[in-house]
Image 1: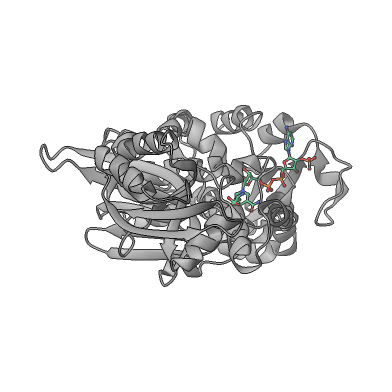
Image 2 (image 1 turned 30 degrees about the vertical axis):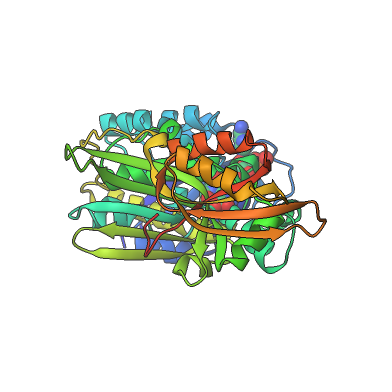
Length: 439
Ligand SMILES: NC(=O)C1=CN([C@@H]2O[C@H](COP(=O)(O)OP(=O)(O)OC[C@H]3O[C@@H](n4cnc5c(N)ncnc54)[C@H](OP(=O)(O)O)[C@@H]3O)[C@@H](O)[C@H]2O)C=CC1
Ligand SMILES: N[C@@H](CC=O)C(=O)O
């Protein structure tokens, strides 16, 4: 190692992830110096409140509220504040000043990635973001680098630790969403505003990032259809278990080829999904994530591990920092990325999958015929139907599994069912994961 070489590192944020990054940087400075080929000097930590209680004891003299000044004196900037503002302005300042930036901020990347990459390219700086998807799991680098010579067809999986933790507890402990979310927050899994987790925004942002790098095309976050888990009831969890499934929030990004024209497009979506209990995704418990990548030459690959948590995510952040430092010392290109495919995005209503629809219906003759007629009129074919009388009597519960149908047909059917006199309520609609890793 060149002992005389020191790179100055500014850290923005000392919450769940930032405090662990700072601790590891300080505790393992010798090891990092060996691995990076230069001393990584933590020159300061920008926060909102320098007096706030922290998960970790860190030297008070490192703390500042003056993020801009800190950035301008640094070679590398690690952004772990979260949110769009002021992260956008600060990351822009850092890149424009020539500093390499490491971030875990998927909201920032999903909404402003292209402009940040443009600035980075213009000034010859690098933007690293391994921790933005999948927490500790290496997935960004494999997609950007290791699989750059392959053709990726599909990226699919569990990309939000908080919702996986919640759904897992709803299955295994019969816990409520609210109580499980409280624990996930204590564990450091949830976003500062956990609405981002439970309403699927976090997974939507991650899907946009994954789809963009997997298919080499810009996938705006607004084109990723999103449904969170707040509508999932204890009844749906019980129905899923009875049918040999578990409920998981999945992000599904796939390349779709029109069979008539041969034109390729990209579909990206996030929704609660019925996963067969013997599928590998069903065994992903707690705050873990699992992401399948299917590519033409490599075939199916699975990436699995801690998807959230302060120290786990710090691992990915520090891996990026060491890469950045090595490049700083040895020179050479940074991570490559090409976004030249310019593929169209499939409209959400054209996406096809299988569904399970639960209905509260009147407990009287002729109901099934009325319901079946609606399915036929909307070209949604029934695969299975199971009827049981509700425990409180007076009505029955009808759970219908469909064959593959488009999202557009499904939406129209659900509206028609809600207006059918025999149907008291459409209690839930879940998409069903197909064979293998196909949705
Ligand atoms: N937690 C996790 O498991 C994972 C998180 N991420 C991402 O990592 C990032 C950080 O997450 P996490 O550590 O959980 O977040 P926290 O909310 O725990 O911490 C945020 C930190 O940023 C500081 N901060 C926030 N706003 C400002 C501001 N305006 N000016 C200065 N400092 C500010 C806070 O300061 P103060 O302490 O004074 O309030 C706090 O130290 C986010 O982008 C998140 O999405 C990615 C993967 C996993
Ligand atoms: N809130 C996120 C944190 C990691 O990205 C999650 O729960 O996955």
